[in-house]
Amino acid sequence: MKSGNGTYSFIDVQASITGPGGSFSLCGDSEGVAEEGIRIEPVDSKNTMTIGVDGTGMHNLHGGSPATVTLVLLKNSPVNQQLMDMYNAQRVSSATWGKNVIIITNRATGDKSAIQSAAFHNPPSIQNQKDGGTNSWVFDAISVEHKLGKYN
Image 1 (cartoon, rainbow, N blue to C red):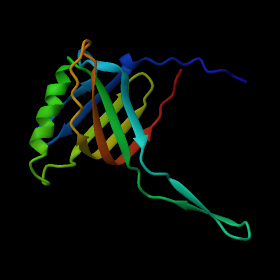
Image 2: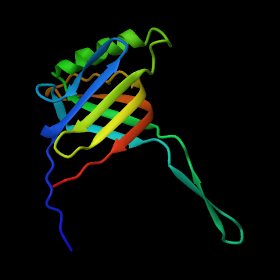
Image 3: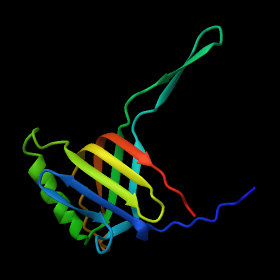
Image 4: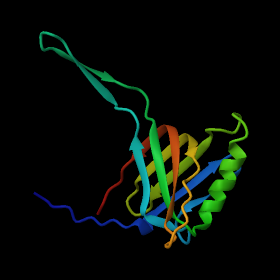
């Protein structure tokens, strides 16, 4: 059995957002992404299983691929201001709401996530304390498509 010898580094991850009010990089050089990075979590199961009284069963494939995307930034990240400006521009009308596209790629492995129809869940909770801390930006996305690459 061959064991994995691949490597991973967040240095290779790039992310960007495009939507009403802006188009810019979310992570890369000097964007101030915190250790928690970017998380994409499915909202709905792809399958439900139904079992009959006689023990027979059925799988139900669900067509949607909604997810929650969380980006954690250092308090002093310049991206916080860009995202807040974008949020403020979008929240004034349903014509501008939920139209963000977020693309996340790993240039070393070929991993790619394409997030479509993303809306800000809320602005981040703001906390002022002894240490700067982080701001968490959460997006609700109607559609997420993943392609996982190869780790060599």
